[in-house]
Picture 1 (spheres, rainbow, N blue to C red):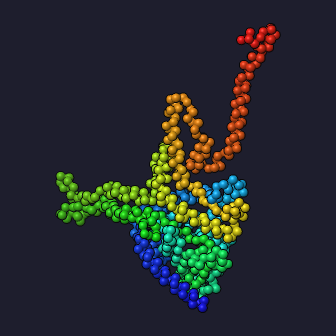
Picture 2 (picture 1 turned 90 degrees about the vertical axis):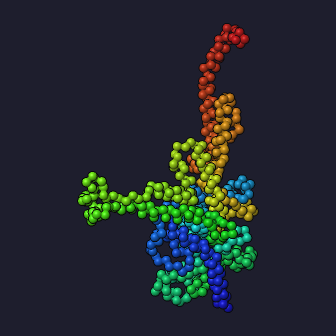
Length: 555
C-alpha cells in the first residue's frame, strides 16, 4: 500500500513538473539568449536534459565584454547597497515599540542580531558567495532564490545555496507571494549515497553506481508547497505549514517526505510584468543595446583589420607581381616618372564613428545595470557636501522602486527562515518574559546604504533650510532662528546617514561630561579674570573705611 502511494505521488509530481516546464518554456528561451551574451557559464542550463559537458567553451557569441562586466558590477552594487559584509546591515526590534523600555528586551534583540550575523557569515555557511550569485541572477534573468538549511554534518549553524533559475519552477498565491516551488537538480551517484537520510531508500543499482560509476548523474525533484491539511495543534507532519517531498526521477522513488516550519526557499524578482510569475531583469531591458553592440563590434573589428592591413590598389600593368607588405621592401614601378603613386591603400570606413556608436550602446547597458549611478562621485570628485547629499538623495529615489523590493521579497523572508532554523537548533537566546507575553513579535530595521540613501532626503532638506536661514542671520545679526534646531540630534542623524561608524561617536553621557567640564573651565576663567577688579574694589572699600568714608562718598 505504501509503495502504491509512493508511485502515485511520483507520477503526480512528474506530471506537474511537465506542466510547469511548458509554462516556463518561453522564459527559458529568453534566459538562454541572455546567457550566451552576458553569462556564458550558465548556457544550456535552462532545459532539462541539455548537453552541458564540463569545461566546454561557451564564449563563442561574445564579442564585447561590456555586458558581462556590467553584470558583475551590478552584483557588487546590490551587495554593497543591501548586504555590505563589513557592516551590521539590519537590526531586529520588537513590534511593540514600548517594549524597548525594557533593558532585557533590548539586550535580547541585540543578542539575536549578533547570533544571526555570526552564523550567517561563518565560513561554513557560505553566505557571501551564494548571495552574490543570487544578485547576479537578478541582473541577468530577473529571478533568483536562496535555499537555507541547517548546516547538519559540520555542526549547528546555517548553510546557504543559491538556486539557479534554470532549476526553479514556481507559482504565486492570491497575494502575489511565491509559496509553491518545484525544483529540479542533479546529484551524482556518490552524492546520493552520502546523504544519510536517503541512503536506505536507494536501490541496489544506485548504490552500485556509486562504487562503479560515482559520477553518474541522477535527477532529483523537490516540491515545497503550503500544506492543505495544516493543523498547528497536531503532533505529526500536519503541524508544519509547508509540505516537502524529494523524488528520484529515474527510479520513481520517494527519497524523503516531510515538511518545514518556514519556506526554505527565498524566491525573489527584480521586476515583474503584469500577468507574469517570473521576474524581468536589467539584461532584458538592455538586450537590444547588447545585441546591437555585438554587431557593431564585429563591424569595427573588420574595419580596424582593414585599416591596419589595408587592401592595396594598383594599376593593371603587371606591377602587382612586385607588391609585398614586408617592411623595407622596394616596389619597383610603384610610382610613375612624375612621382605619382601607382600603388595606394583602399580608403575604408570611419572607425572613430563606429567607436562613438559603440560608446552609446555601452552607456545604455551601464545605465540598465545601475553602473552609471555610481560613477557620479568618481567623475566629479570636487563636489561640496551639499552636492554629495543631493546626489545621494537622487540615487536613492532612482534605486528604491526596484532595488528596495529585495528587502521585502528576499531579505525579509531570508531573515525569518534563519531565525526559524537557528531556533530549531536551540541557538536563539531564551525569550524574556515581556517578549513571551507579546508572542515574540518583531520587526526588521534595515541599516544599509540603501536605507541611508532614503534618509538622505532629510539631510538634504536640512541643508536647504540652512541655506535660506544663514543669510538672514548674517544680515540681521540675530542667531535666534537656530534655536529651533536640536543640533545634538541632527549631528548624530547626519553621521548615521553618512555611514559614520558608531564607534567614532562618543556616547551621550560622555558628551554631557565634556560639556560640564567645559562650563567649569569657563566659570573658573571668568572668575580669574574678574579677580583683579574684585581685589581693587575690596582694597578701596578697606581704605575708605579706615578714613571714615561711606560707600556713597567713594562713588
